[in-house]
Image 1 (cartoon, rainbow, N blue to C red):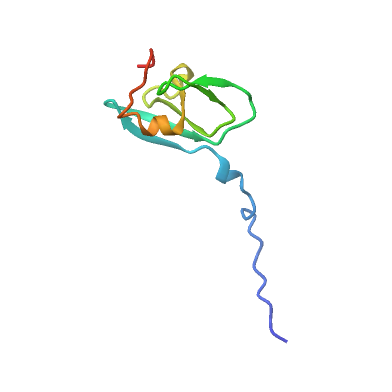
Image 2 (image 1 turned 45 degrees about the horizontal axis):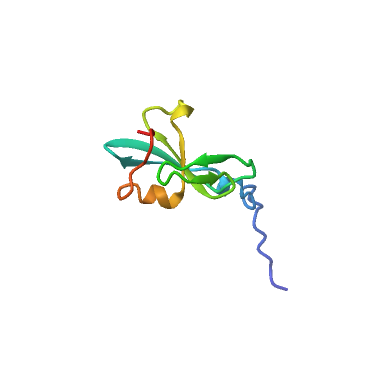
Amino acid sequence: MPRRNNRAQDETRGDVSRAFRPVDTVQTYAGGQWTVRVLRGNADGKIYTCPGCQQQLASSLPHVVVWPNDRLGDVTDRRHWHTSCWRARDRRPPQGSWR
């Protein structure tokens, strides 16, 4: 009878919570460094205004949150962008009083 290769149980296998944690990246825009966090959406029901297009952005939609890299603890500088608007920020700069 052939021998079975029983692998030791890896406790991290099956834990998908790490895959859904927000990952922060630093990107350059308008001569500064910006921290960008990709969010997958939630059921909070909050509505934000995207600085790129000035349209409403529901928290249930996947989007990005952007803030100046030099002010990590200041939540008043965070802005929620549509992902496509953030990608087009060089062609379509933010409107309103965001800067």
